[in-house]
Structures are given as C-alpha cells and as structure tokens.
Amino acid sequence: MRTSVLAIKELAYRAGRNISFDPERFGEGLMKDLEYELNEFLQKIPEQFHEEYEKRYIEKYCDWLRALSRTFSVMITGPANFNTRRHEKMNNYERSALERLSSWRDAVIKRLNRQHRLVGWEEVERLQNKLDKLNELQEMMKSVNKIVRNTKLSDVEQYEELEALGLVQHQITEAMAEPMYSFQKKGFQTFQLSNNLARIKATEEAIKRHTAMAQSEDKEIPFEGGTVEISNSDERIRIYFNTIPDEEMRNRLKKSAFKWSPKNQAWQRQLTQNAKYAVGRILGIEI
Image (cartoon, helix red, strand yellow):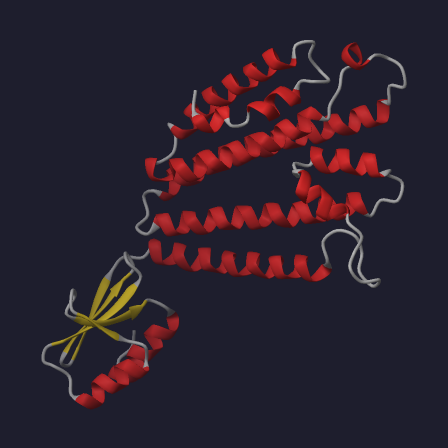
C-alpha cells in the first residue's frame, strides 16, 4: 500500500467509530478503496502530474473522511437522545464532501485529456490547479463564516460542523476564536474574501491569456534588417537582426525589457501584449 495512503490510517479508523462495530476493519476498507481509486485516477492523467494530483486526491479524500467521522448510526450510538436533525445535517456534509471529490476527479481527468494537445498546456493546467484551490478556499471561508456566526449553534455543534466541512483542529481553533478587534466578526474577515476573490479574477485572466497563446501557432514577421519571431510555444518574442544593431538600438531594446539571448542569438522578452507594442514602436512595424 502507498505510503501516502498509510499516512491517513488514524483518520480512516476514526471515520468509522460511530457507524461500524469494528472501526479498524472499516478503516482498513476505506484505505483499500482509496488505494484502488487513486491507481485508477492516476492511470488516466499524464505522469508529470502524478505527484501533485495524488496529494490533491488524498486531501479531498481526507476531507470526506472527516465529514464521515461526524456521521453516526443509531445501531452504534444507541437510541437515547438521538438527534435526528443533527444526524441529517452531518449526513449532508458527508454527501457534499464525496460529491466534491467525485466532481473534482472527473473535471481533472477531462481537462487534462483535452489540454494535452495544446502547446504550453502544462502552464494552463498549473494555473487551473491554482484556480481550483482559490475557489475552494473562497467557498470554505464563506461556509466557515456561516457556521461560526450562527448563534443558534453551540460551540460543540460549531466544532462538529467545521470538522465535517474538512477543517483540521488548528484551523477550527482559529475559526472559532474571538476576533482581535470589536468591529470585526468571528471567522474570516471581509478583506480576506475580497483579496482571495481578486486572486481568482487574476488567475482566470491568466488562464485565458495562456490558453489563447497555447492555441496560436508560432509565426515570423520579417522587417528591414531582420525577423521578429512570435514563439507561443515558449511564450517569448524574439528579434533577430541580420547585423549587430547599433548602440542606440541596443539601448532602446534594453529600456523595453529585451535581453540578449546567446543561446538563441536574438533579443527576447516574455510574450505579452506590451511586448508586441514595444516591438512595433521600436521597429516601426505592425505585430
């Protein structure tokens, strides 16, 4: 069994404490299921992403286990003081966590098998993975605030729901702590959600930009005295001169963030819209 799977043994055992007469055996079954599902998942995605997505898969599986650990069966806990409302609420958290894992897994497989045909697709996927994490964080912060600001819930009930949401102990402690200033509310502050939302928007724009580049072919544009190369494959714009440019031209290139590349024997910089404008301005051509 994978080391990464064995590492969650304690959590897997705890997941069955209120729903199984033999929590350890139940936990072993959960670990075997994870091992099988993980192997199936990794076989369907490119090898260079195995390490990162194995970690992500297990994180989401652990979120589900934490939610599962808060569910209970009347056969195990007994009928005395059985709280039907709490029982259903915990079951809903568990189902939601499992659905999130399933939806995420299917989306990643579909996305990677579609994008691998694109030049530069690995950068697009890196950004998409970042976006997934930011969106998950945004939803988590909103859910946490809804729980810790609910005055109808006791501290014990808040703790249970936060754990069912997938938070670990130190995160729960921080979420339930009283705010530092009187004007603040418990949980995540407005600026934290706003800042994360700004990162989401920036990442979405980066994905659009990189996808557009990945879907575009490389091209060359001749000009009097050389050639401009638009290299979408490695996100560079290069200027090849037929002869060594004079000092004035070299200074203009440097001021516009171009650097000499001995490897490519060209002046180059990262491919951006500003870089295209700079080339057009310096060489007097349309890019």
